[in-house]
Length: 497
Image (tube, rainbow, N blue to C red; front, top):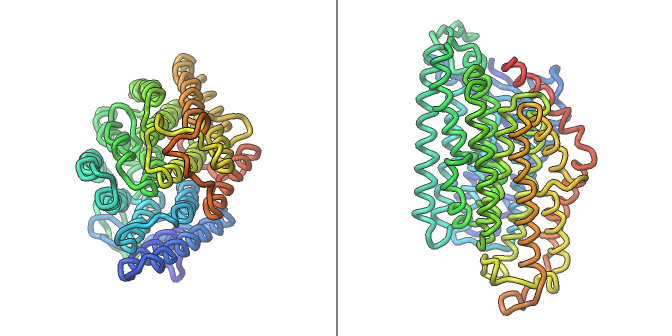
C-alpha cells in the first residue's frame, strides 16, 4: 500500500533522522544544540498528537507499508500499537528532557555529538514502530552504531575498552537473533503484494506469528532471540557490560541507555519472543524467572556496597529491569499490564536520577559517594527534587512506580508466591541503598569537594519539575496509560492461552 500522506509513525522516525543529518553539517555548538532541542520537541509534539488518534478508525494515520525488498517478502512496514505507542512516547519525552537538562554541558565537536544522539533516537523509534522482522533488525542495529561512537569518543578514560565490550556483547546477541529471524522466515507462508508480486516467504509480523514451528524448533529458537534481548535489557548473567558502560559513558548517553535503550529488550520480548514462540515461552518461563530474580537480589546487594554513584544507579536499573522481565514471563494480564506501565515509569524515574547524578558530577568532578556530603546545605532545591524522584524509584504509594510494581508483584504472586516473595527482597534492598545514597551525598558535613556546589539553574528546575509532575500525575491517575496499553496486553496474554 502506497500512502499519499505521512503518518505519525513516519514522522517519529524522519524528524530526528533529518535533524541528525543536518547537525553533521553545522560548525558550531549552539546551532547544533538548538536544532537538537527543536527537533526533539517537534517529535514530542507528534507523539502527543498521536495519542488522540489511537482508535481503529485512524489506522491509516498510524501505520504505513511501503514496498522495499519485495522479492524476499520484506517491506518498510511500521505502525503504532499500545506497546509501541507508550515506548515512542517515552522516547519522544526523554530526548528533550535530556537535551535541556544537559544544555550547559559542552562537548568537543558538539554538532557530531548531537547528530549521533538524534540518530540514536531514530533507531529507537524505528525499533518500537517496526512490524516487519528484517526492518526491526535493521533499526535494532541502527540504534547501536551511534551509541558506540558516542560512548567511545565522549566517554571516560577507559571508554574504548568498555565500549568495545558493550559492542561485542550486543552485536553477538544481535547475530544470534538474525539467525533466528532467517530460520523463522523460512517457515512462514507465502505473501502476495498489492502489485501482484508473490513471494514464498515473508518477514511480516503476522507471518512470523503464524510460522509453522513445532515445539522442538521453538525451544532452540527461543534462546537465540532471548539472549539478544537479555543482553540489551540486561538480565543476569548477561549484564556484565552494563555498569562499566554506564560509568564511562557521557551522562546524557547513559540516560538514553538506561532510560530507553534497555526497553528495546523488553519490547522485543513483548512484540516478538513470546508471541512467535508461545510454547517455548511457557516451557522456559521458570528458568527465565529464576535468572531474573537472581539478578534482582544480586544487583541490589552490589548496589548496597557500591561507592561509585554511577554504578549504583546502574545496578539499581538491573534490579528494576529484572523484575519487569520476570513479570512478563508470569504471563497473566495483571503482571503484563504492570510491565507496560513500569516501562514508561522506570524510564522517567531513572532519567531523573541520572540528571541529578550529572549535576553532582559536573559541579564537583567526583562520582565517589564517600568523598561527597552536605550538598543539601548548598543546593536545597536539588535535594528536594532528588528525594522525590528517589521515593518514586522505590515505589512509594502515590508515585508512578507504585501502581506498576503493585501489578507486577500481584501477577508474580498469582504465578508463584515464592517468586514474588524473593523478588520482593529487592524492594527492601532498593530502599536501603537509595536512602543510604541520599544520606551520604546530600546530608552530613560539607567538605572540600562540595563547598562550591551551587543550586540548580532554571533549565534544570524545569526538567526536574516536569519529571516530578509526571511522577505524581501518573501515580495518582494511571488509568490513561492503562487504557493505552490494554489491547496490547490482551493480545499478548491471548497468545499464551
